[in-house]
Figure 1 (cartoon, rainbow, N blue to C red):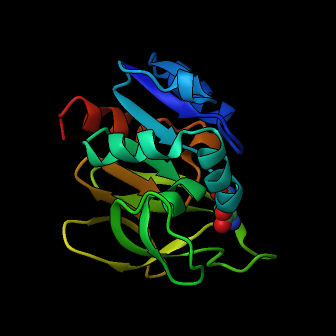
Figure 2 (tube, rainbow, N blue to C red):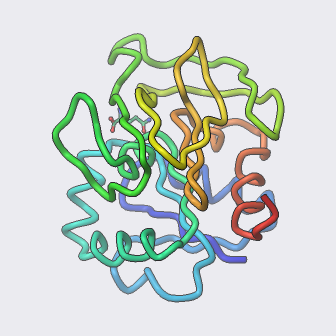
Length: 190
Ligand code: GLN
């Protein structure tokens, strides 16, 4: 299995380290020529979604990646990656890939106090540590989307077929379960 990790901006190294610990091969994608056939899934890391959105366009990656996502390529989006996947943002007029049938609120916990760590119950996995860094949350869930985790009643992890998105950053903890969940999606196990 080979997973492409987008390395345009943000917390991509942490995903690469997590995949390495799981024994999964990964490929850094920085430019159009890196986005080749043979990737079994991709990770859209956290960072700054507006900057990342611009870079996807500047690097000529936006259209091919969007096409691949709509074509069924498994995607795991963390934080800014969740924002890039969403069909609608409630406090931003931009829409990026627009594949995940949810409405997402950016910086939903406030800009200053928006970073915290907690434990949450992730459906099918159990209790995991979750680090939030000025993260979004899901305000409305559309058809075909399963809620996998909530914190204080707010939706922070969702799945829609081969698309997985979390408001938090499993890659900055030593827990491998969410990445392993993503590889199970890729393998068609769940
Ligand atoms: N606040 C960032 C944004 O709106 C997301 C934060 C993150 O990815 N850690 O793009």
